[in-house]
Length: 117
Image (cartoon, rainbow, N blue to C red; front, side, top):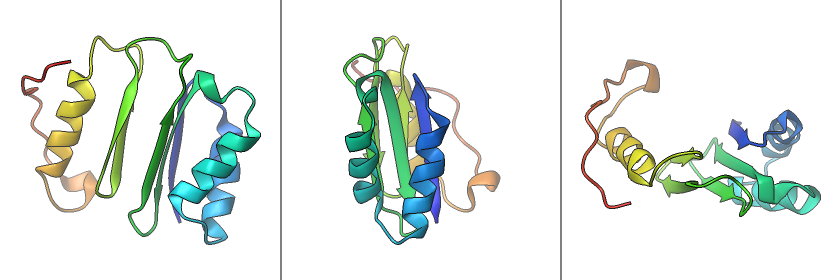
């Protein structure tokens, strides 16, 4: 049905509720909207969703500690917080996009490319 990650000030119930909504046929974007609407502490969280069809949605609240952010790509989301800059998430996304095959069998480039951040 998909995958959900909650971090920063995480709430495991967002994953439980979100997976139930994905199983009910909602897209990643629809699930994200519903979860955020019901979450009074959303500005303290990061939430990333990938649905079974490769749809993605992500949110990074304003109260998450600097540096924080996320990037969405085809079939993936990379999110991070308490980082120095965007360099880490951009390098992770670049490495993911440069590889093919089942996730468990991919070999990632561990050298980070230079990015302004």
